[in-house]
Image (cartoon, rainbow, N blue to C red; front, side, top):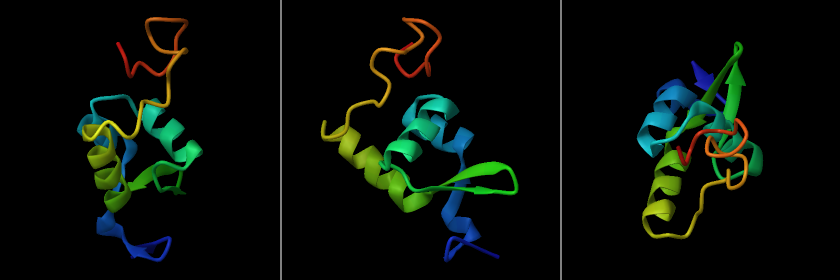
Length: 84
């Protein structure tokens, strides 16, 4: 089975991507919305393309890519929880 032209094993669920980034699935969806991760919805489940996740992990380690949630975090009014 292929998803968005790539093999299915190249895609992981948002929960797994969130674990890898140390954040929440909501924050992963925010990254997808802003284009910093490649994601697709397949049968009601959002998936993240593995290579785009690895690229984001590298960028964050290098300090190039900040978190997408800056004001609306769990420290504030019920945001994504990425800075909790």
